[in-house]
Amino acid sequence: MKLKLLVVDDEPGIVSGVERVLRNFSVSYPFMEETITYEIISAGTGEDAIEIIDNSEVDIALLDNKLPGIDGIEVLEYINEKDFDMAVMMITSYASLDIAVKATNFGAHNFVPKPFTPDELKAAIESITKNLYLKRITRKMKDEDKQTRFQFLSVLSHELKSPINAIEGYLRIMQDKQAGESIGDYMMMIDRSIERLKGMRGLILDLLDLTRMESGAKTRNLVPVDLVESARRVIDGIEPMANQKRVKIYVEGDDSLTIDADKQEIEIVFNNLLSNAVKYNRDNGKVFLKIEKVKESAVIEVEDTGIGMTPEEKELLFKDFVRIKNQKTKGISGSGLGLSIAKKMVEMYDGTIEVESRPDEGSKFRVVIPLDRATVIQPEEE
Image (cartoon, rainbow, N blue to C red; front, side, top):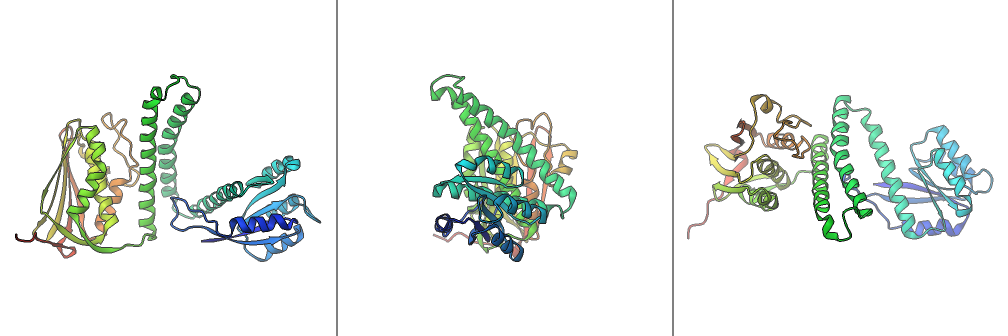
C-alpha cells in the first residue's frame, strides 16, 4: 500500500531531507497484511498546497506554519472545512511551538519541531500513519452490521483494558521501587505482566484469524498436511502451560494421517482444542488426543479431565465472542473466539465438530473430516 505524502515547506533543505529519510522507509503493523510505503510530493507555498490537495488524493500532509502568502494554519483550516480524508502534522521551529499546539486543536494530528532527526521524523510518520489507517478502518466499520461491530469493540475493549491496567499498575510500583531495590523483589510482577501480554497477543491473533477468514482476505495454501505431525508441533508449543498445571498429554491412534489442507488452519484447530483442554483442566489432569481413520473419515478426538460444562453452556460454546463464565472459569483468560474459529475452519473442509461434556468430569471434542479430503500414509515395512 502506498500513501501520498505532501511536504509543505518553503525551505528546500527540509523538503529534500524529508524525501531522503522517507524514500525507502516503510511501516507495517500486526493487524495489517500490507506494508505501507510513501510517495513524496512537495509544495513551497500554502496556495500551491491547496491546489495540490484540491486536485489529487493526499493522504498525509507535513505542514509548516511559516509560509509565503497564506500560512500553515490557514491551510489546515481549509482542509478541515473541506473535510478531506487526510491526516496533517505540523512541522515548525521551536520558537513557534505554541502555534503547533494550537494547530493540534484545529485538527492536526501532531507536530514535529525543527530541527528533527531522521529517527524523530520516522517515529512521527509511523504514528500518524497508524492513526490514519485506524480512522479509515473505523469509518468503514460504520457501514458494517452494528451488532457485530458492537460485539467486536466490546470484547476488544473489555479484554484489553483489564490487562493493560494491571501491567500499568505493576510498572508504576516498579518505577517507585515500592517493593524494594532488587530486581528479584519484582519477579512476580514481571511474570504476571508477561502472562497478561501473552493473553493480549492471543486475543489479537484470534481476531485476526476471524476477520481474515470472514473477509476472504486470507490466502489458503492447500498442501498435504500430516495431522499427527501438526498436532505434535502444537503440543510442543503448549507443553510449558501444561507443565505449569502438571497436565499430561497422551497421543494415540494412527502413526500418520495426511489431508490436503492449509497447514496454518489445521494448527489453529489443534491449538484451540488442545490449549483449551489444558486451560480448563484440573491440576494433575490428563488430555487424550486420538487421530485415526474411521470408515470414510479422518477423526480427531481431544478429551480432558477438566471442569466440564452443563448442557446450557454447551449450546453457547461455538458462538462468536462467547465465553463460558462461572465460578470455575474465573481467572482463565480467553477471547471467546477460539472454538468459533475452529468450527468455521473445520467446516471449510466439509467437516463437523461436536462436544460431549459433564460438569466436574471433563469434555471430549470430536472433529470428523470426510476421507475424500484425507489419505492415510502407512508406515514403511522394515
